[in-house]
Image 1 (cartoon, rainbow, N blue to C red):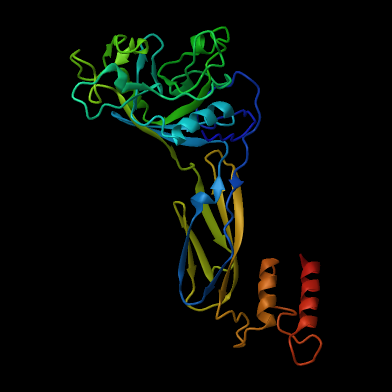
Image 2 (cartoon, rainbow, N blue to C red):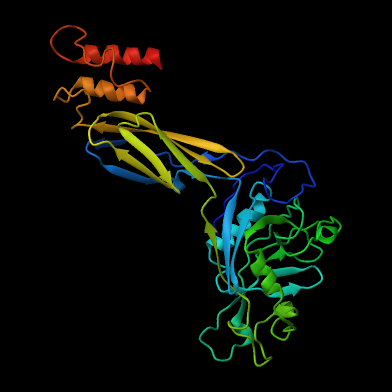
Length: 370
């Protein structure tokens, strides 16, 4: 299985979420620029260029996943900075599609939890399922217990074997009540690792919790509190009776984007969702530095800068030739200077040509100005 360790620090605050922190923690890791946009070159004439910013930035602090259930979608924000090994373990199963066609196999009325991630149902083409059709999810190595956050309503936590704090593998559960008095007790199997919180769909889970429970231990000992929909008791439940979790998939990072151009009269920059649109003016040449920014809901930000060279057949100084002066303009733009101005189009050694002496002087000039 693929293994991704997003971050190694623990953090103090959860923004708008209702977690309380039983231990000391550190600050959230900063946003990352993972794929900086490359510089672009285009001809003047009103072109429109687009770039998807969703692949430019990454938020190592949060990951979003969606549980697609028979009763509706449940979106969950994961916390790799608080439970890095647990989140990486869970995403291994998600990325390998191990949770496809799984189902909720336990409803605990005392703790108000819904448990899944342990079994899939494979007999969609059978009239009468058999016990062998309820297939255990292939288990990877157990993950070390990372109890840190409180088991309160709306949180997602890891299930594990009794008497073994470091035994969690594929199974998880949703807390639909405040379970701090029981599941946060270190004497109770080391406490239970919370690694996510529901951001949308808590009502879906409440509806699932109302589904009647059957003792189906004859199929598997783990099915003693199996929620079943419209079940008559004979012979075995199928996909219409089970509370199916059709799939669990990643969602895009919850980031907002903005953009600004240093030469808006030449290159306009606007953002709709994650799509950056660069609008080139009908006439006008130059080198516009475009700054794109991403912001997380808690205020963390990151920026990336690239240059859009708008040319008339690479003739930046509009002398109807492509020569050293145009190259100098490009160098100046990359150095963060105006592409026009001193030394951009002069014959420095007065030999009637733009050659190596001019290039050397310009490069020295740029080195002193940066």
